[in-house]
Picture 1 (cartoon, one colour):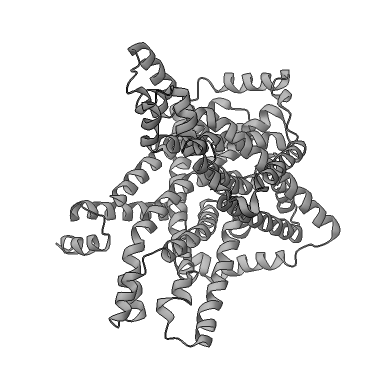
Picture 2 (cartoon, one colour):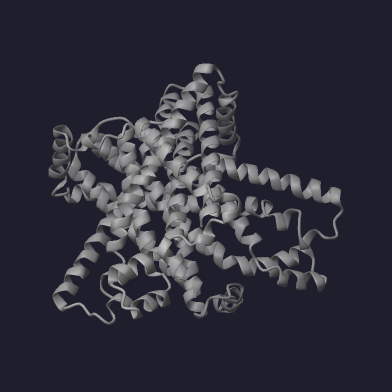
Length: 289
Length: 290
């Protein structure tokens, strides 16, 4: 035990056989990429201590303290703040509507392999199972690889300004993520109940409904709630491209150097995110019990 | 009551619900109200979206994007933008770890004032109050860093240090630093205490217990989290350019604003390729290291 603890990384973590050089190669690659990236990203810590920067920091803080808490401003901001919550709820709901069917199709144990398809012919499995499976995986991968922010920008172009493109953006981007996670959850369920149902002669929908869904549902709900927490953060920034919510107001206030308003809005955002985290956390704890 | 009839049925579907039907019913009602309220507020209009106008509008927009602009200049722009975005995400993630580690140590209760480390050697009240204060301050700082999304940090840093990739790096470092700090803190608190007790029984000092007991147990999980956040950051870095923080986002902003649709598709493809590559690399490294 002792030598293992002393090295920090247990010796068996890097199997000695083929990969004894792996840590060194990795470290060298890491340092090389880091150096190149530092150069490309124009990282310059000295810039942080220059007079201009410090002056701007002071200006920001002095402008922001005390924050603008006038009733008129707060009243004006109530609507965008609520809209942020609404966008997150509708966006997450849409994401479930997109993610669930695609996620089911993208589950190999549902689509083409395993217990449900034992009695199918090979060609049938390939055409009716594998082709939709691969297509669903590809769609999910495109949906989630493009950031919600870029989706929002494109949807603003396609359907106009407002909260609606924000809902669509979160729905599509998070639909891609939810679909992938749902399929991972479904593939991870215990196959024994499915085999029992199968042996008892249950139909395919029956096996899915009574064997698969009850096992997967708690994880589904829990992960979806977690995504809702992420959606509230996302919906608060989508406004920067004109998709409604608090983000738009924050950008406006920042542009006009109204830092007292920026501080108020950041405080509002903090409260929103904290309360959604709290609610979602409580619900998830209940599900986990 | 219909709700009471339905209660047990739904409760059976969710095996982990010990509470009665009324709480469940209340929850369902609350959820329904939330959805209806949000539906009204966001002006979502499925008829408009799936009606002839909405779909044809979206279809027309998508059709305009094709084919992607594959001319040499467009490809070079995309490649340079992707490399800058990669650099921002990489340095930003490293900075985030540098910010997260010290703050995580200060928010680990088992290192500050309770648990195995303080069993035999209790803190005197003054020191305990000091440690509690440090814990509270660090926790608050982490919450602040985490709650402000990276793009708002970028907006603030662009104002402070000017345009370019550097404010993007700072923005990713601050936000992700907050996220990782919280995650690292949880990992550090969750380590197996038996190993620490064993070390303590040999008379090891607190520092030794931390170095040889806590750290080796927590390192793999922390590394895994850092790699996972790098995957998140590559997506975030791709959009920071919208507020002037360099990389692909800046070019996307320009192409969308100037209606350069074919170039936009090239850039989106570049994001897709880069994100997929980083996901693959990160998954590979996690499997290899953790």
